[in-house]
Length: 316
Image 1: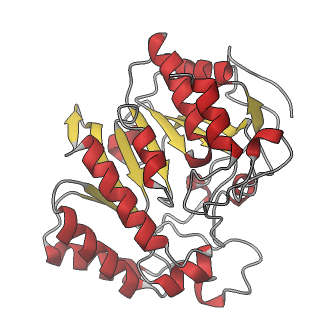
Image 2 (image 1 turned 120 degrees about the horizontal axis):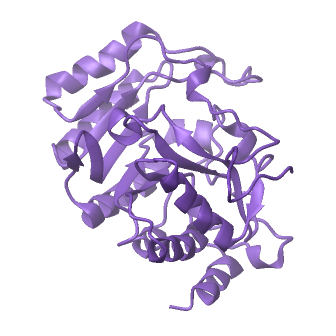
């Protein structure tokens, strides 16, 4: 495959995500809904300890946080990078070397965070990295506003899909993510992910293959959360793992959304977890206590990328 030509074609009228904005991201000037052009921009690459235990393990997950986002949820904890305000421009070779260095540092996997708008470039970099010895699992960590055609490009490159299912109610998804069709798009995406990688497999407590669906409960929206949990149980039963998250953290300047301008309560969280137990869900991760704190929000340092790295260590 001519990867460079593939990248150019996909960026000329970009339809990689569910926005289908059709932007010509090749000219270096026009940007998509994601606010990115065709140059890969990364905000952080590091060993990350705050994923689910089967992903972070002892050494950490080799996370690569890509700048830009196709959803831009109003409550986003990584808003500074979702809006495209932080990051470092990387060549395909530098991205490839970043994957390899994370493996050298002991990462259990390569964790691609918000990667949708760079899928063609990522595939190119992964192909090169695998040729050079990359052997750890590849995790695709996404908000799930994905086009099926984009996901099909990843078939054979991704070992673990880690998608969100944020909302079922279209009114809620419209209000907080400006995406009325979110559940329709996301549910199709998850089905394709399960088709590609099948049931979950583990080795020494680490996930090696499979789908782990995350759902973060929003304040005052436990009814929608229960519908999502029911849908996942009815559709996939024990084929997937589910992570029920309580870490919602209200962000500054959310006066326009007073109903979610608070943390969720213990009662709200327990309602959803108890419902999952009632349904008989066995493959689930839950969070203990109040975890809406800064430890779950990475430090997107403006000065250093992959500290002490042999790959890159440059100022913006």
